Image (cartoon, rainbow, N blue to C red; front, side, top):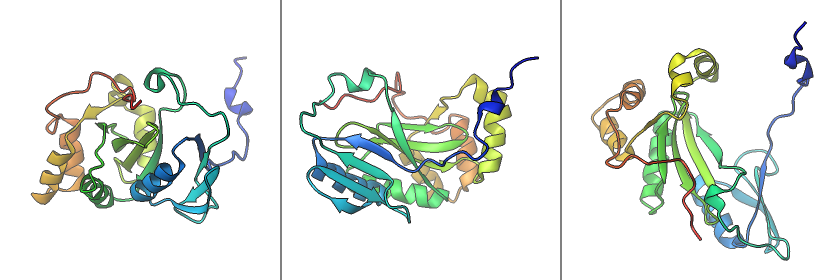
Length: 203
């Protein structure tokens, strides 16, 4: 009888609580995550900081141990590509893009994955940070789609878009669903399509 891999999963799995980064730019990192993700320091020092944007004691931890070195080729090294944060509505997500744009913080990658519409930024150390909104407005629906949609299986990366075209579409009165569908259909493509999804080097 084939082995049932599901029997190896814990009956009560732990929930993801936080991500920890090492950094040589503690002050800049704390300020950036505050501006971009609303993460406030619960504790902050030159050696370690714990940040949260909800009721948890921390969601991002930053450590700066002695002897720490910058990576040599971060964009092409294995490891975490990005950490993601989600808004509950399209308008919140779009408004946050505009807010950050007005602070001269622009995404290096913009993709409609079907399951989410996502803009990707880089923090001061070059780590990827995804800000997303669920493409269906419901985790159950997007989970069903990612598990069964032929469209996703054939193109899991998704469709690139120009976020300014989304801003204009919303100002014209189009709904989230209309914008999402048109984005997936390639109506809001950027002038230049990225050749890959690697993290750009910042060193």
